[in-house]
Length: 130
Image 1: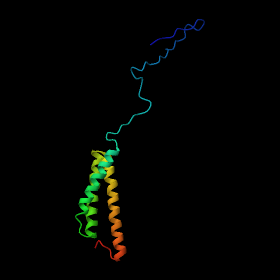
Image 2: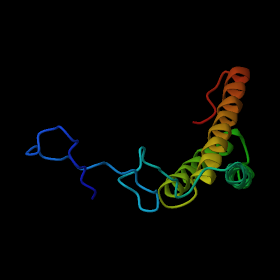
Image 3: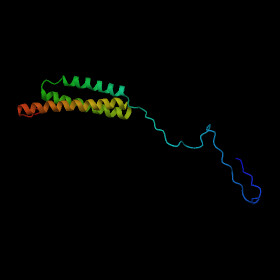
Image 4: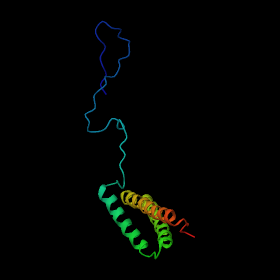
């Protein structure tokens, strides 16, 4: 630390203040101005596409198990619940991009099943699930 000398003509008994030095930047003088946060598993387009493709195949397999509209709808509900559980696990422990793709396709699959049920109900006048 450098101590400034008193100016000539000033009070010789006055305490001198230390002169502030500009840090070189080699060693940080303190914490950064703003915190930097980084995602452990960033969401990428490839991850979303992979999750969407896997979920679409999952819904296709479960949809093919149905023999009529009612069984198709119930298999779609089961497939969606299992897909959502998988997406929740992926959000917590895995790739959030894949979980986003799974969730998007699950919403789409349930919407298609609801539309099929509505059309059947509207054309026949009988609720197809029971």
